[in-house]
Image 1 (cartoon, rainbow, N blue to C red):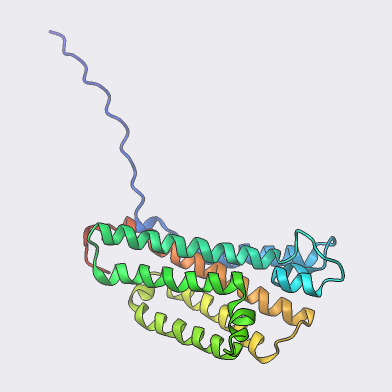
Image 2: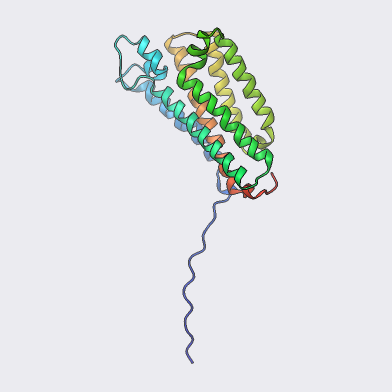
Length: 231
């Protein structure tokens, strides 16, 4: 008596879990990629690296001839990373809100997106350097306010940071703080100070992006959209 052969079952789908994210590889990439790009900008022989680091508007004002497409190259990449991070965090917050995730997790994603979005606007439109000082608000006051908001965000989000990758978060904060300190103390267009300020800033932004994107991925993949308890 013959038996009908059962149809072959499809191969099992291998789910991506939070444990699949290699923490050290993310940390290494977060330093290697921006470091390699900065080195390439400094070593290339075709354009003044300083004009590629400065904001496009500042580069246009400083350059002997205006304008070139590479003006503000590193700065524009940094703005793109800010925007990517803000978009990922805000979209994650929307998913978490719609799926009934824990309130603390949703607020973490929301505050991360809003704060990063403000940093993107500040960078893109030179709010602390040009716009707000024209309204009588000194640049150092704006920078101090941003620093206070950053510390407040770190205090509010410390549980999530500790559960994700505190070393990467601290690296981002240290690099951005270095950039802000150089800008505040020297406020100079000396080439070496520009490289230090904007190089540290780009590394900080890159680490900020990889931390938040990988953290949001861990949150969503860990099932916290279903209200699972936070780790």
